[in-house]
Image (cartoon, helix red, strand yellow):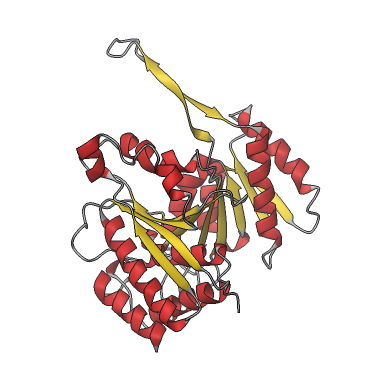
Length: 358
């Protein structure tokens, strides 16, 4: 048993769109799980941060928001963004305002085909796609450096500066090697674009080679990001753990999610490996206002994110049980429309909760 005999305090930030729906669904599932595992105790604190708050106050979260979150053991996040607010305003106003200052520098995105579902790739079976994507989450292309000048003039200029530090690159590369070492295949692929980005991403190549010497038991290779898209589609079984920059892995993880069946099942863990700050867990899909309020959103990406949260908190048995229960249900044909099923959000959650407490 892995229960630590404490009550875990979970901060909930549903934010916008279907984020509100899938977080509520996941809380229902977690409450059912505590009935199955009676020594697992979870308390939830709801934060009303998001676009509605921005419309009223001009801010997505209060000035002391990070201090408030540090009182909790983990954060469960939905999705941020609304049609009437520019995406860069909402993303930098909330999610990126948390990742950087809280040093959630490791974004872990596991990918697999759930039993009973299908990949978009032909001749791919359950187990053929079983990856962990490791995304640098605090610097790189999303460092926030740059600006605009001469706005409105023909010579208007905009710069977006990618920042790569040795400490930032080394710590994420090392975490990726550690992740690969912990898995049966012990294989790592390092993704860059160092043929054309000859400074920051050459640093990535050099650091990867240096760190690899400490992991002789891990086989590794490197790929240019454009070639990596081809490999993910044409040779998915050749991949295991994949690490790359903030931007590259942001894009590749969406591709990975849809190859596994649906972006609706894809989870992520925004980790502070030092554990000085609470880590944040979220599905990788967006706020999806086109389906908001229709009770059709797939909650499995958020539920899987909650499994990752429980793993991080040390509750491996409960996490494994919940994820296995989800796969048992999809294997039996219970799923939302994006996975080929016919259940709505509420019905799928009801099936999961009933199965947990059986």
